Length: 495
Image (cartoon, helix red, strand yellow):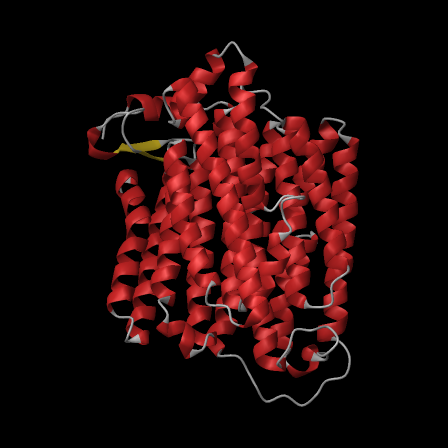
């Protein structure tokens, strides 16, 4: 498949899926079929794009044949293609879980059109080549997530939804203000053009003032401490199928923006603005998140605090900013999207089987359903960094990059937080899966077990193929540090 065609399919197919699901919303089976089919086609196009960009090639489309920096540019490089593949895999799994686990009230309220527009916005954020359209795509996926949060019921659910909406609107305002300032100073918002302008800028104030606003906006969207308080209040309220989607995608889109804008656009190839601040924030996020997880007594809340802690790992990779650290960060993002989503889906399996995921109310699942125990154990061990699963290579490569630069604080944080992550996972395992078992007849739909198993096998496959996949991550990292191929593709390639 032509890479330019793959870009268009990856971007537009979710929109077509949303329109088909909207047209058939009174016929849930047809709406589900439309959503799953659109997601599968998008996944195939994303895989094709990843194959085409695996050696560092960059492909750009200028909408309407308006050349950059005047027109809308879509760009696919190795980093964007990696993000497309792992996110689409999670979207397919989440749509299937939504179809089999959510009650009829969700299906009646535009569930599948919203899931597809969320996918549409996510893919647009990965493929856009300018800052303003990154803002627009953020808003598309955020509006979809707002609507999905609005499906929550009860006083706690409404409070969590409002908190989520308000904090994300603040992030959007910061983002918009930063984009306005940058355009006022440079006359462009195109990533490639900005990289060239910033490298020629004589005053650091030009970059640092705008970067500070974007730091706040991306920090909220990525859930970095102290801007992460909204996440553990909101995500545990969602059904596991939607928690998996939110946990896998939304914070990672914020991290993608961090890597793209700070790691490439604002960078001079050796450093970027507020790098030291990001290092401190990343370490605090790692430690604070895992301590929060250790103190919780419910699976969804423990996993939600783990999101914050793991986001800290990825932010630390960007803050270290060596080729190895960036590659480790990109590998970590890909691994974590799949593992974290699968952990929430496994929580859904536990609740469907035992009726609760509260550590004080559920036990003995290992005896009554060994299959669910295995489906949980695979991503849990990977998140904890146990070899040969994907999490081990993600953490080991990040630790190696920190030691390579004699970054003792970063290395100590990686080791300490890794141990506390293992402890919190053992806490879940001991309470939920060991102990006395009550008679249980409920069994999740076999398709749900199969879907979780596919994600688990993907985690194992990433670990077994860590060498070749890490080389692709290194190619993506090199493209951020030295974006010459990106600049040539965007600034000189006609449609």
